[in-house]
Length: 376
Image (tube, rainbow, N blue to C red):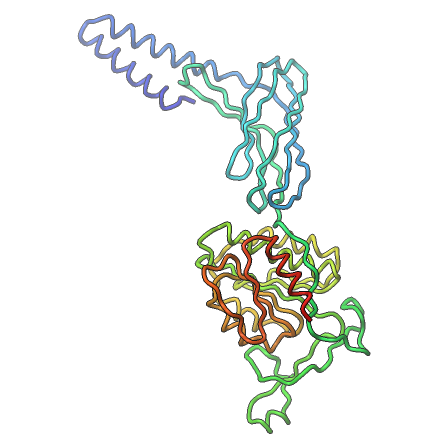
């Protein structure tokens, strides 16, 4: 197809030809004919279509954000010999320049190039776009080869040990959530909150205190690590800060799952995933966190917490200090509450019963986490 320069050349040539014919001057008409001839030659230049077979490989298919990944193209020429080709391979919103050497008829070339992994997500790679243009850039034709594939760029993680939840194991209970005889045992009495099951109301205590009291039941085996990720767009004016928040949530989740503890991940829009614990759940957790994006939510992170089963550890990944007071209001539902603040703009003190970590990168998070775990 013609480029803007090609369309302009054709239009000017037609005007010149008409002016020369009307005024009786042959020179403008000759320039017009030359211009139209150049446009026609450019269109013919881009007409030939190389017969290529393109097979793509991505190695590896899943990487952590920032880790290297490469695309491997196997290009086979099924037509006449072609000179070296300049092509673009799509990689998400960006494109990667690919230089394909000269291909003889029936020949195959393998080209390797690096893929961008700076941004987390499911990145479509391909198709290969071959751009053919004439020397004067009057015409340009783009053809696509090969089916697209996907590269999964997952959150970056750092090794975090499992923090003790502060609750001793039930001596008569099973030792694993995978036990078919998994049970729940009485833990404490607390005030009723919206969302609690009515069958757990302890009527005698409610009559004595004048306030609805419910039995807090906990799993008699392994406590759940509940991770709440603040994902409302207004909380993250800097996209890199949200990426770091997702990395932190992934690090906590992977640490708990690797230790065979159940993990639950929430945002203000609801539950992302709920796993029973085990190294095999690490892949599931990372895949779900790969797709999470900032999104307006009908409820705050704390409101989301009120709807989940109590017990275990609560880890809230957020920024700023606006939610600290509200988080303290639900600390009674969990054995341990920890707030991770990503690059906060101002210092804050943790409410009673809530532990606080401020960090600017994953290494700082790992160090603060280690110190917190050494405190008993």
